[in-house]
Image (cartoon, rainbow, N blue to C red; front, side, top):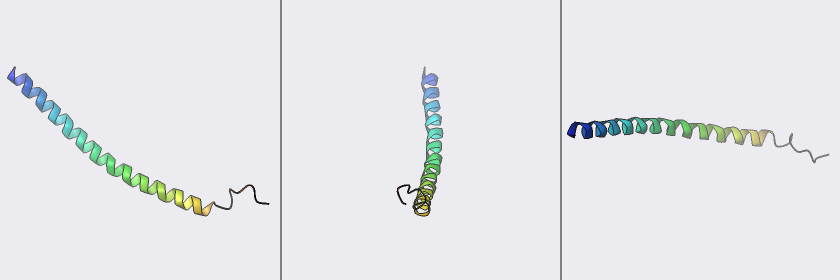
Length: 57
């Protein structure tokens, strides 16, 4: 019984360690992609401001 409990604790510990590494890596990828997407939207908003205005004559 002791070895079963120790095995389950070891598996949970390894799983949490792997999930922690994945979340840490994905957080930085998400942060960098959000900054790049924000810069893209700003550039698009300032460069296309006149061409999308249909109401002008």
